[in-house]
Image 1: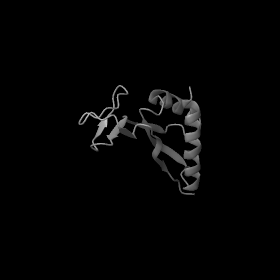
Image 2: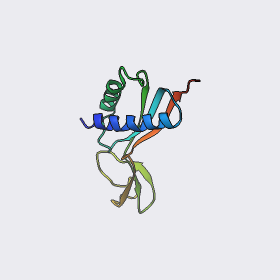
Image 3: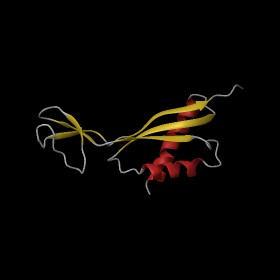
Image 4: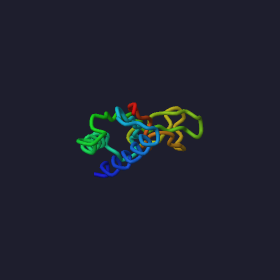
Length: 117
């Protein structure tokens, strides 16, 4: 389960940004996960919740946006959803396809609270 190491790396980034911006309480983290990123959203969610339990981050919500594998035809320029790993343009049947989405693993945003001293 590599989702635990991904979660811990993600939380290191989140903590660094919280410290840099004086955020003391984390409310939400939004991530974008591509279909081909080899990350299981439910496993990531489980690891996130297990990792923040009984820590200052406890109670934060992980929101996951799943991104489908999308291709763009080099011949006609059409973008389309790639299903079943078949990379054939539905418009012109070309097999010359670039993957334009579906490999992401990004932290999109985070929300938190600052408290007055």
